[in-house]
Length: 285
Image 1 (cartoon, rainbow, N blue to C red):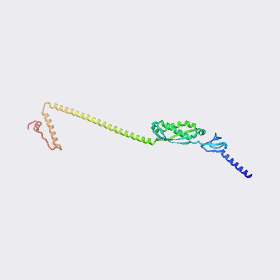
Image 2 (image 1 turned 90 degrees about the horizontal axis):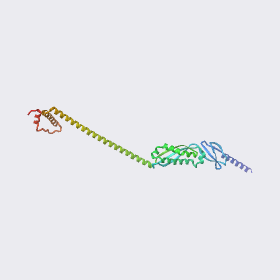
Image 3 (image 1 turned 90 degrees about the vertical axis):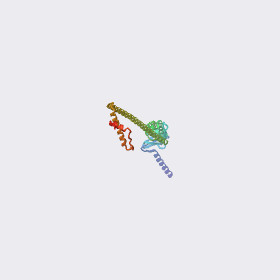
Image 4 (image 1 turned 180 degrees about the vertical axis):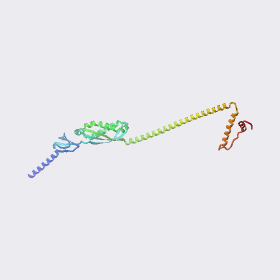
């Protein structure tokens, strides 16, 4: 009898201890717990000491109210000009309404992650390749704006969405490198052709200028010769002796230069030398 009594007391104490333990809940800072009574939402436990009714109340969910970091895995996205790029993102969210976060969606983290992925594909799909690669801030702003409303319905606040990386796929990178090389080669060819064209133009202009100056020089020489002849004619008049003297002087100077030449091997004496000398001296030999 005494043994049964002691066993009953011990069992009662154990039951009381378990019951007390189930009724007292200490919630850590940065968390909120959702309590259900008989399978239905009853209350939300805030950080600190909380009392619930054992066996009737149950802590169904433990939510973190600090900022949550969601990493969105890399995915392939096709741009408007059918280029394939790789992009991934990271989101910073915060639970502002635990009840909506628990009962509004099955898994809010997975829901936000998939929404970011689909929205990112939609935004980038409306852009050209160059626009998508150079407008990261624009994509980020549109992405955050697009998912903000849905996040509120799930009791979440999207604090920031960052595009971690956005780059062409390996095959697209190779194609872009080939395109860039072809473009550089084209520019080099055009530059070379322009240089050759400019050189030919300058050479033609130089030849034209040279020909023009040669023509002007010939005209000037012709005019000088004409003027010289005119003046000689006016000075001599009808007299032949001065003219013969001038011609003889020129003749002798030419023969002198010919005889003084380093390459001269033979000196030619004209047959009319006597007649020439008579003309120069003005008397008979």
